[in-house]
Length: 177
Image 1 (cartoon, rainbow, N blue to C red):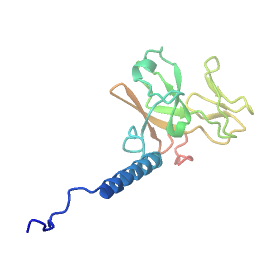
Image 2 (image 1 turned 180 degrees about the vertical axis):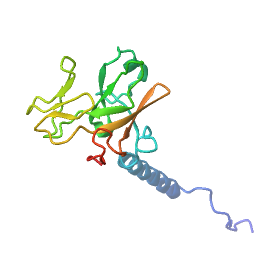
Image 3 (image 1 turned 60 degrees about the vertical axis):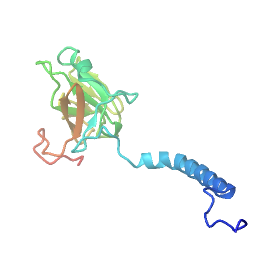
Image 4 (image 1 turned 30 degrees about the vertical axis):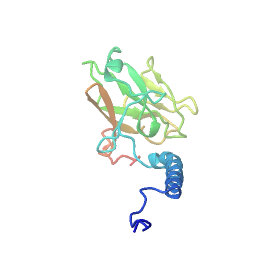
């Protein structure tokens, strides 16, 4: 019985070790290639309930509310709002942000434009449309008022939400929904 073959399997043969290492290398390569694709389909963490997003600057960095509120009353700050659309926020006389923001996209051809503090109007340089401080059309050819967004400040963060209620300027449902 000295020459009997043992019934026990060796713990790990050379072939099993090489198969394991090959499989691990393939899994690591596949995982690292698929990670960016999977991350694309996961929404950003800074999206709140109701579709709200953090207000950001042109580089994509969140803007603290204290930075905008440090400006004098009546100041209009331009931020990257919903879907990266430029949006104006207004510092009110009491030192808080106005509960509504105005999207900076002309309803005529989609141009972006500056706020003119001298005339207290948004003035589109492309075809001469003018809007008052609330985004109502003062002079065409723009056919519709500017889009509105809801603004909320929570813990020094500015949250921008889509406006889905009745447009207070026209009393009608918003045209952009």
